[in-house]
Structure formats: structure tokens, C-alpha cells
Length: 117
Image (cartoon, rainbow, N blue to C red; front, side, top):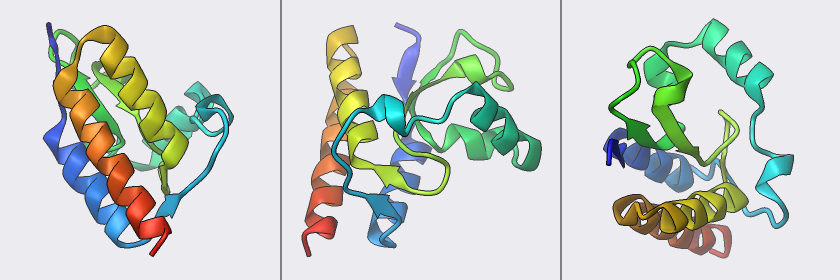
């Protein structure tokens, strides 16, 4: 499998949660997940390394400077979304990426703990 856990993204998400940059939302991730236009606007102002930090997985078979390399988004480039972490966890489980599933679950628990504090 060429998709691996993006540890820099996990570290970044933990910091965002600690800083309170989170949305304890319920609903469908499709309502909050940035679309291709949003991604392109973000990349117009930021480096690919910043884009990468918003994705829990990376596909080593894709070029480092391509959006296709980065998988399992969890936020909207501003905040970590509860429903984004749930979606990442579920998709990682379905696709057999246990390290990404575990990381998403740990982040989800941290988000819920912070939101309910």
C-alpha cells in the first residue's frame, strides 16, 4: 500500500485542537469538506506543504506537488471538523489503513474532550 500516515498532519491537527480551532459539528462531512475550488484558492496563497498538513494520509506513488498525493482531509483549512475526522476514520477503516484510522480516532477523542471541557 502506498498510502501512509502523514505524521506532520497529525501533529498539526493536535495543535489546532489544543488551540481550540475546532468544530464539534454533527452532520455530513460533504457539507464542510472543501471542494476543488476551495483547495485551489488555498493553494494560491499557501505552499503544498501547508495543504499537506490538512490530510492524514499521503500516497507516495503520487508526486509531492500534486493534490492527489494527499488523502483523508479532516478540516476546512481553518479548523478541525469532528465530522471530517469521523469520515477519515471510517474511510481509513474501509480501505485497510489502520494507522490512519487509529490517528483519526485519537484526534476525534481529543477534539471531543476539548469541546466538552
